[in-house]
Length: 33
Image: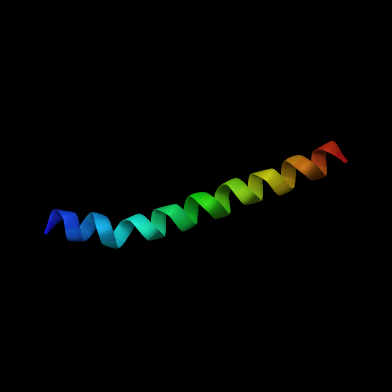
């Protein structure tokens, strides 16, 4: 059951991290400009 829970949550965490880092990169490039 725990593995199923982790497997179900992992994609959501990955998407959240990707969106967080991409957003930070955009703000960082804006500050650089």
